[in-house]
Length: 464
Image (cartoon, rainbow, N blue to C red; front, side, top):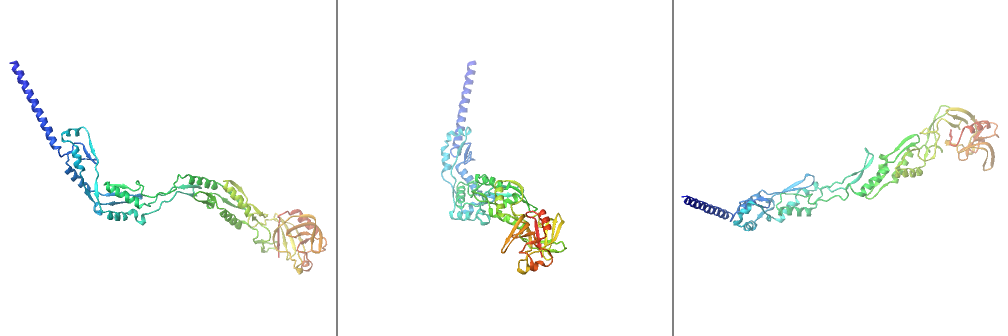
């Protein structure tokens, strides 16, 4: 009985194994039949999953995707446009690639699809009307005149807030290269890409000079050296400041140099001289007898030595110097400002033949005198002058005369004040017929007093 039981179980087990093998073989064979025209599990074509799909089904799916296709074209500054297949008569063309993939996958080896991935890249073939596409490209928003702006190079500009030159970065603009753009778009359509970025594809023109340009930054250093200069003038009593705001107007920046426009500096110095110089200008003067008169200019006043000052100022700016000073003068006056005569001067009233010496607004001496002989045309000229120099025991020489004097004080060429010991009287109408050659003849004692108080440049005011 035991033997019979064991034999029975062996038969049953063998039968089960045989049946199982048959079932498994039949099942595997059935799947093999399925995979005769279906793709393995884990089959990807052009990145998309086509597991268990037939080539026909894959073609249908691809065609459906094609129906949804459009190319979005992105550009600079948020510009974009699209191209649809219908706009260019575009059609999707299928070749034998999907069938060939299936041929590569043996139906008997379908089980391998559960253990590894099968990836395929096949060409996506399209056809379109080339002429229509070219017309479409021509009309894209990127090529409209109002949307095209040329790139601009980085440049230097002066910042009045920071009082320095700064580098302004280049602007890429929107100037697009048409030929390159058309090529990029066609390549994207041929590959059925859904988007393309024209900037990433280098379809735009770029600026030649950017903010990191070595030469540009060297020019900034040079220009900033110039504007670091700070010169505070005392220009005939008025403050004139030359700082970065002023100097920036004198700097000329080119592609490879930062220089000072010396003509601009000349204009600046000339302008200040015209504004503050008093030399050669008429003045309002209040006479001792209470009149307000306009004095002729004469050879007196503040006069800027423009050539010397232009040279000095240019050098100071080039070196970036800080200074507080007066400009160079070729002539100076007794007092700063437009009223440059001050309160110490010799007042010569030619009409009344009377002189006053003022020192610090106080009359030190007043005196009658004899001026130039009017009858012979030697009238003493009116005007404002500065004492040229003074000398003791001088000999005055002229045509037909040689006269020694004790106190000689010239103020207008060969015209000056001096003692005239040969005269017995002064003042009145003597000058009309018996005047001097143009000098102011004074009594000895008064000439001595005047001589002691005045000095080179001391104002001498003559008027009628």
